[in-house]
Image 1: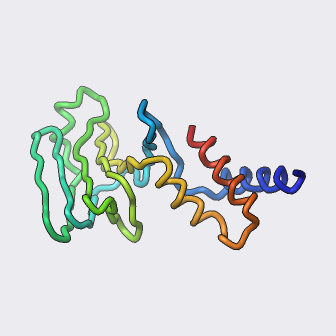
Image 2 (image 1 turned 180 degrees about the horizontal axis):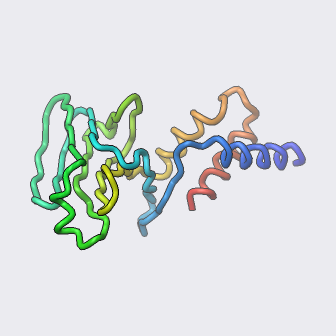
Length: 165
């Protein structure tokens, strides 16, 4: 029991100190809850790679699906979107993949990606919408070694789930 408490304490400290990506918002009443995780902030050019992608440009209501591998690029430098936003954040575009994996930079992301434009701010933010269980699988594999004690892995899963809520 004391080992478990020590593991949980160390995990909570390491999670707070070393996590690069933080869940920023949870919204769902369904059984499979989704997290909104900010993965990029104020970037001028968003490049997303994936297979069987569906792209939705919200302000023009333009939805397009691509069958094969596709690279989609968004230029977030312009201010034309801001005139419609009334100084509020606007959802510029959403991307999802039938394969459930999208790549941005060197990282793969499960779930879907939203591109958000904020008035008065340079560039766009990119938000990953991901089911909590998928997020935890990725998080645990990055933060802990599988050779660690099973109770430590369980404690990390509990701590990560609790932190997300």
